[in-house]
Every structure is written in C-alpha cells, then in structure tokens.
Length: 389
Image 1 (cartoon, rainbow, N blue to C red):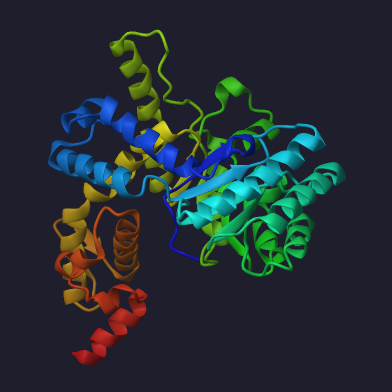
Image 2 (image 1 turned 45 degrees about the vertical axis):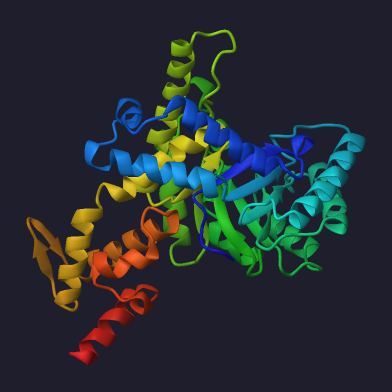
C-alpha cells in the first residue's frame, strides 16, 4: 500500500465513468483559478500569513495540475441511496466496466475503491455482497484497491467482509466509525479484518445522529466528535491503520443566478469552513479526511500546505539542534526538546513530505538528516549516530 493520501473524494456509483477522476480534477483546478486567482486571495479567504502565502498558492497550483485527486471511492451507500435491485445491479456492472476502462487508460488516482452497503442487517449485507461480487467478477482492479464497510456495530461484520474477499487477498478493507458501539471495538475490528485493514474513517454525521444530536448542532468540532477522535487515536496508535476524519457538508457551489460577488462569497465561505475543519483534523493527528465535491479540494490543499509550511523554519532549527546533540535534551529559544519531542519533529517532517509541502530532496538541508536516516525510526537514527561519535 502506498503512503497515506491527504483525502478521499466520494462520488455516487450511478455517476461513475472512466474519466470521472480526470473531470473532477479539472473542476477543482478551475474552481481555484476562478475564485483564488492570485496569491493575495489566500490572505483574504483563509487568513494565510504573508510569508507563506505565495508559496502556498504556488504549491496548490502545482498539485492541482499534477495530482488533484489522491484517493477516490465509488459510493454504493449514502451517495447512491436505496434503489431497486435491478438499478444497483446495473450500476455495479457499469462501475466495473468503467473501472476497467479507467485502469486501461491510467485514469485513476493512487488509491481507489468502492464503499458498499452495511453488513449490519441481513438485507443490506446480502445487497452489499451481491454488489461486491458483480463488481469484482467483472472489473480489472488497480493497485491499492480497497473496500469500505460502513455503519459497523460488531467485529463479526468485518470478519464477514474479510471472508467474502478471501478469493482476493490483495484487496484492503477500510472500516467506518459511525456508531457508538464501534468506538469501543476498534482493535477487534482491525483483528477481524485479518491483516487487511488499511484505514479507519470517522463518519461524523452518522455518529452524531446516533447519539441524538440534532442536525442544527452537528459540527465536526462538537465535543462528541472530539471524544470519538481521541478514542480512535488511542485505540489504533501503533497499529499502522490510517486515521481519516469526516467531511465538511457545506459545499462551495455558487448560486446559478448570483452576481460574481455573490458567487465568490458563497464559495469563499464554504472554503473557509472546510479549511478550518481540515486544520482542526491535522491538529488532532488526522492527516486525511473526506471531500464531497471537487471544488472543496483547493481549500484542502491550502489548509494542508499552510499547516506544514508556516512552522517549517522553527521545526528545522529544532531538528538540527536536537540531532547535533544526539538525543540529549536541547533548548531553542524558550522551547525545550527531548527524545519525545524529537520523535514529534521527525513525524512532522515525514508528514510534510507525504503531503507535498516539502520535497524529500530538501530534507537533508532542512533537518541535517541523511536520505537514509529519514526513512528510519528516531531510536535507530540516534543509536547509529551515538555509535558513530
């Protein structure tokens, strides 16, 4: 499996075509060019500080040109709805044909998969298995293909999916955290996946609804969501399972009959909310989350790039000084660093490279780490440096 993407973009199965990801990427690029054409736009929209504003704008432009979408999920659940068996059969068959065509045209992102219906009830499990079987029996699959299982209430549902996928050992499983029960059973879910579990996605709105929180009060910053994220972090720490935060449901769709100013205001307001939600996710250690519309992608890229770039100078100085002392506690200004914060600094640079804010070739200059060291855990780096000295 490739390194963790910064987002997953969802799209209804009834709409998927072989060129869908290319078209959606072009829409994201067009939205950025129209509603944030110059670096100065970013300060007005997001409050991005002037020292990194131009760099962020350049990096977002480059990313939208070369890889606007890192992960895509064909959705047979909420984004598809409940339709007749004949309709879902036809959609599954068509999605398989279009996926095969996209693989042949090299038109898919680095990660790709489908979200099926829940295994929570016998009827939805039967429907999910039928869709999965029709899709897998006809589609040519890309590398890094995953199946996302929603609304899980018990590990037996994950085990049933793993059993269904037994003829396809290369396929990964993603679990969705959307129910109160799931918060306390995450390690069991991962174990039930039999080594296939790639990621745990937080379905914030289903989760809040299941707690009785009304729609008007459902917010990604709600204390119920903070608790759920903390439980996910604690339960899955060190497991290698990627943590994925939920979606912003206010979409940057301008009114058709609005003035240019009205359209910009609508898009910028939705972008700012998405930007703030993503910054909050990153602060909480969730380096991937959902996009529901291609025009959300520019705000995501701006948030990710700014999050890492604005602290790059200080982190570089701290990392170089820490390594120079080879694990001894150090102080830069009023900040004290020991082995624990040294590991946090290394995490920061690894995530910075993964998201594209910094190129790996720049790491030796920024940190004092060699290219070989950068791929090692901190204890191994320090042990090798201790022996060398």
